[in-house]
Length: 136
Image (cartoon, rainbow, N blue to C red; front, top):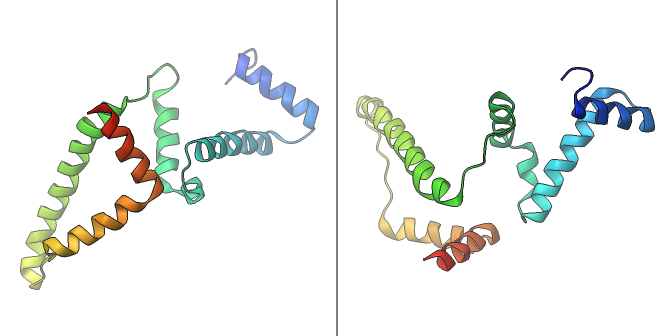
């Protein structure tokens, strides 16, 4: 940001009114934006300190303004598949180490079903599933 930018001018006006240092003003601004996101999307407040949220903010800074957010289709189909592939490759990479150590990754279908039932009960997951049912 440089002097003369609309955002910079707005921040300077806020700082003059509140008589606080720039760091506190910027911290408050991001705090308010994150709070609104969590409250209005009914997300857990713990996400405010999530490394994934921090990563999202860093990537947003990197790509800059004007880049459109992903649509739900991309998240649920394209990027979910990419993340599945990434995790699968990561697990497959570990399998060579597991053979050397004599370790395995075990889970039976009943155990997995119980885990999925618990996940399905979470409000945010239930909301997502209900929204997905509307689409199909």
